Amino acid sequence: MVYLTRKIEFSASHLYHNPALSAEENRRIFGKCNNPHGHGHNYTLEVTVAGEPNPVTGMVLDLKDLKTILEREIMERMDHRFLNYEVPELKGQIPTCENIALTIWKILEPKITQGRLHKVRLYESADIFAECYRNGASHA
Amino acid sequence: MSDALKVVFGRRYRFAASHRLHSAELSEEENCRVYGKCNNPYGHGHNYVVEVSVSGAVDPATGMIVNLVDLDKFVNGEVIEAFDHKSLNEDVEAFRATVPTTENLCREIYQRLKHLPLAKLERVRIEETSNNAFEYAGEETLDHAPMP
Image 1 (cartoon, each protein chain N blue to C red):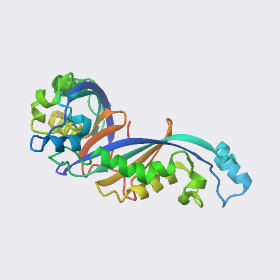
Image 2: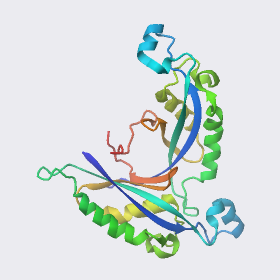
Image 3: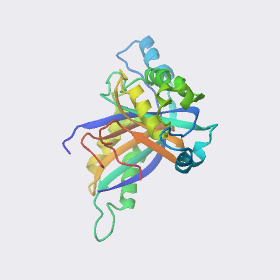
Image 4: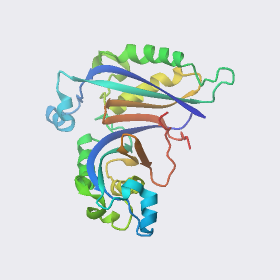
């Protein structure tokens, strides 16, 4: 098995607010992230695809194809967007790093038909990330 | 493909500490040969970066596996305060008899964090410098792909 990773960056704004909680609880749990006007990040997304290289092309999948999928599915949806209001897949969810990573997984998994999606890792900043993969996935 | 999806949250912390690599079981000459400059009797230091990864259910009310503030409090209390601006050999009990290589440091930090009450500790990754990194995930096999 070979693992191939492509990285993209997008910029987006969000805020954390759960309407089922009081204003006070929202502030206590989410702190600065509860600012009603939102704030933004430069997100870095790493997408790892696992597979056996095709014996003819030597590729697990063509990086150009992966680039096109990421442009269409992720950049167009999320880049320079307000995640709470403009990304339908995140509606009703708090757009934390965990939930965005999970949403990206669900969007990408059916689109990757050569090799299979192995992992997504989403950095909200250099020091904070969330990743998503299948429980039984193993490279060892 | 039927396996459940797993979500992991990762956070990087930093501390600066000194150490000296020296094994009481080796002769002076062997220590010098094995550890090279790291055997300098007065020690030397690094800016360590510790990446802590935890997994668990994403709470639908908060969207979080663990609240960053609570995780920071735990990691700072268990690790960063004990190690930052310290001599690992002299100030950390675990390294009085064990060589403070970053391999052993990974294990020590994993031991200190594995009782994290907030989520399941997945792994500890330490960058000793920007060119050297070590990971420990307990005695289970690491179940994520290496970064290509």
